[in-house]
Image 1 (tube, one colour):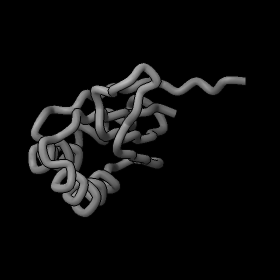
Image 2 (cartoon, helix red, strand yellow; image 1 turned 120 degrees about the vertical axis):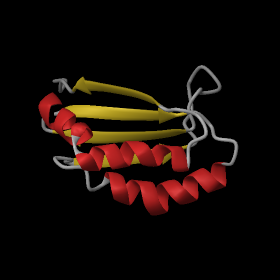
Image 3 (tube, helix red, strand yellow; image 1 turned 180 degrees about the vertical axis):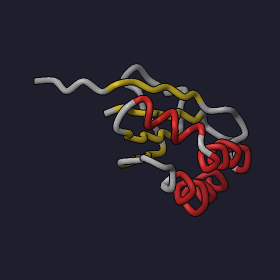
Length: 102
């Protein structure tokens, strides 16, 4: 499995972000081709104190090629373009191959 993680800094208007994100952006992201599952959360904490992030989104794909195809698709472009409608700062995006522990 390959995971995409999107980390958002705290926006100026948290309620506006949350409302748009849940009602518009997540349904759009849910339609990414090849998406196996997704999760998200708000009010991200850190054991070391304050977190630089307020929201997290995790998306699961079969492999890096499936993620690349999704992000490079027309739908992926629409998802990326939609971020400016609710986020006043650009998010940090990371991705990696998941290795199961034993």
